[in-house]
Length: 406
Image 1 (cartoon, rainbow, N blue to C red):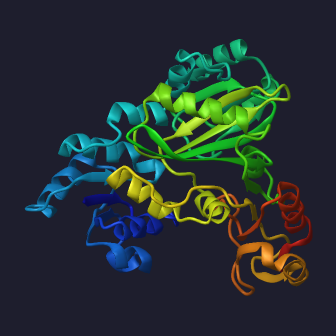
Image 2: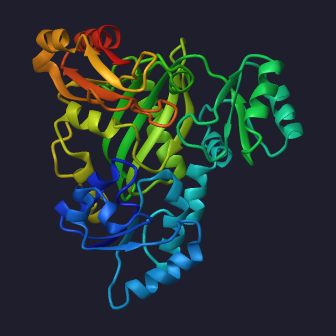
């Protein structure tokens, strides 16, 4: 199996997908815009060859350069786990006649309006919504959707340039802040808990599924520097909280005809128990959520994903073992350098055997820019078979651990 993998060195999780492919026997050809010597060691060690391109923006030039570079070699798949390059991956599949998501299928999971229209056409609940290319169109959608409303880019990722608007004044402010965004999605704000439904699929079959719970919502995290985010992987996806999303997620995948790879869906559970579709990506979740799932299930989903896309199977044991909560920390204080991990020693003494991993910005290093780095100044994963115990430990790391910047 010869696999072309786009951007093997960035974002941070990409070398792990390269490693997974190599571990299942694939020969991996990497294409990136960084010099080979700048790739993380894990990527370099598992690549059969690497091509540096000047830019990912000129697709025609990349296709021509690939043909020259691959002369005499065959490809079986083109894989990409970074949202920004999904269109390029789809167009390269079409160029080389390879299986996987087509440009048309990719458009549906990147364009938030087409996505909602496809899900809505299947009779599933989505927020009231509309596309806006001008401020006039945006105001027309807002009048139909009502307040509170959400404004976000049509093809955005994460919570960048995403705003909740409680009234017309806040809506106008959001439009001013997103002037550089060519197309917006304006939609109904859904009150409720926000969760994910994540899968690994092969040939239209779900080989692995998971539900994770955001506390608080990512949009709140993106707007408040002091918040410690919790992403909680739920052991029992058929319990009352996650169950509606599992049913919704399976129906969404069927409606979209998704075939092979990771999917990452976000959805809302209202106070009445209704599951409302948010959005879906035909790629893995970011922000270390795959790591958290690995700790909850005691498996390696980087390798599992590779086995699924290459050979249509996932041979690892996918039964859940734990609830796992991942907590992001952001440095607090007036300075630019981390000076202390306050409260860490006590937390280690209290919960040590239930802590799966800790990665914090080391003392003496500059703190991270929380607006640019989702994981902030580090992350902790705690796990336990009992959900209440997991939540108790998670809240303790939110409350009692401070990364101090002095």
